[in-house]
Structures are given as C-alpha cells and as structure tokens.
Length: 191
Ligand SMILES: [Zn+2]
Ligand SMILES: [Zn+2]
Image (cartoon, rainbow, N blue to C red; front, side, top):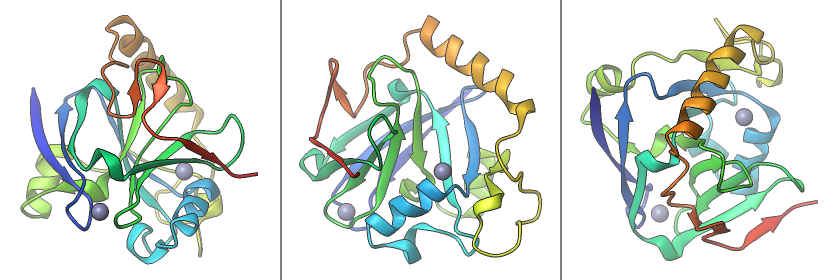
C-alpha cells in the first residue's frame, strides 16, 4: 500500500512529492544535539523544533522522494566532516532531509514539516503514530514521555533490515539530493 504526500517548504518555493510505502519507513522524533544544532544553524529553532527540542523525521528511501520545484534553493551542510548531509532550503531556512554522505546508501530522513496534510487525522492515517523518540537525553527539559535516552538496541535489526532491503532493491536512486554520485549542492562543512 502506498500514499502520495505533497511536499512544500514553508514559503512554498521548494515543492515535491513523497511516496509513503507501508513497511518502508520509520516515523520518528529525534531529540539529538545534532538535529538541534542544525536548527540553530538555520536560525529557525522555533519553527523547526518542538518544545522538547525534537525534530519530526520520516526515514525512508531516496527513490520515494521527488523535488520538482525550487531545486536552486537547495543547500547542504555537514556539522562535521564525515557527518550526515543535512539538506535545507535557502528561501525560508527550513530542513528538507538528511542523508548519508554517499549516494549509495538507501536512506533519507525527510522533515515531516514539509509534508502537506489536510488535517491531523489525515496525517495519522498516512504516517501512523511516531514509532520512536530517540536521544531523549538531549531533550531541552525532562526526558519526554516515551522517549528513549539514546537509540534503542531493539530498533537496530529493523534498521538493518530496512537498509538491506533498500540496497537489494536499489532504492538509493534516483535521489533528489544526488546526481549520480555527486551532491546536487555544494556541501558546507562546519568545523
Ligand atoms: Zn537527530
Ligand atoms: Zn522556502
């Protein structure tokens, strides 16, 4: 089963679509310090983070995501060398997604803020509940309800299965963030 969700940045310049395919995603909240640092880098914490400092992320395969408008407003930052590629817009400083720093890995963590839903009910019907709140030890206040302090070991086999399936089915490609092996925008590496 799959659903198509429209994507748009908060100013509407960058647009695209995401194919939500059952059993091919993780819907998570990430409270890690890097996601918070990324929001600070974008100077847009209020719009990006929830009250706990969490980012809502939809992890799936790059081949399921398409950006059809505003490609010239895509930029990329790496918080440190060899870190994740963190993709964002330059029109409204919103996160787009994170990927590994290689086009060969079938992984993209799409910002749920981009997804256009008619209402909360529709969002719940399509994405389902949040499956994991990870890295709660970095939350702004107390550990949020149901959050794991770090990343639960129990989640690792699921993640590995997801990666292997993605590699087998070559779901790393096409990607809105790589043209062949090359990133579509210059990567700004912070030290
Ligand atoms: Zn994070
Ligand atoms: Zn924008």
